[in-house]
Length: 415
Image (cartoon, rainbow, N blue to C red):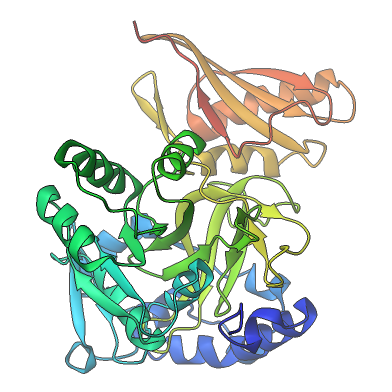
């Protein structure tokens, strides 16, 4: 029994990169047949996009843009290359935001995460994602069908029935949110029911802090892995184990090109620096070109002990949208980027808002090689020009600012 789903997972990293980049021109050309992408990528010569540097010149389309795009061109904003009547399902998330599902096998590419958890053909899993409007449960269904697993379509809620099903049918794995698994375990304890046959869990859709993972492991589920996914993309990255221990980082899916960019911009950051996750997805029904997820993460260098050779990221590290209201006006990360671009000497910057509400102080902290009074004065003028607000400047040494992806920090007191 192989530890890996297929040979793609153990390709030399250079080969994977070359394979994906070679597919970029065809992906972009296909996307441009859709009206929305034709507008977004107007004037782009698909044949010339064959490197990460070329890809980085293309505009970012952010998840936060989808509502307006879909309202203007229903139902998918002109971003799908398969007509709605050629899809299998259409989902709706709050907003509303509509998401398509095509007809190909494991359309959401969820099988890699289930396989990494140890599930194989014939294994039974209890699917506790919602089957109502949103796609997570169907991501699991598609992956289970590919692997040959059997599914209990449990959905969410009805905790007592969840316990009864788990006790009677003894599924090998739970799939759902970590917090709901905790509720099931607590309910089983209250009922005096043994659910110890379920030894594995693949969790997603919410954060998994170390304390919760430890609690689940200490209370009967020793193998708990998480997957980072979205309703637009499906599987983005997933955890793996080696000898029962969770490996560092999350493995990026084989069919994605992932970038980490400075929040508010499309500019890739240095390896290891925290920034916004931007994904290019080679999905023939729903091609996504530089799709900004709004999530923060960072590349984790090196290869996973599990033997999978794809890029690793550190997992979900918060949200990238740090728009903040200062003196009744919104200040955006993109404005900070506009200011910094004017001054090549500034290596990194963070806008810190302090004081109390209605008495805000806005200070742009800038990493520079050496202090420079003229540079400081120029930055003050640029802050006013771009934001229409007064701001102060603090020049700091290289490496001083935290590597946490924050471009705007709201440090005001709200008591």
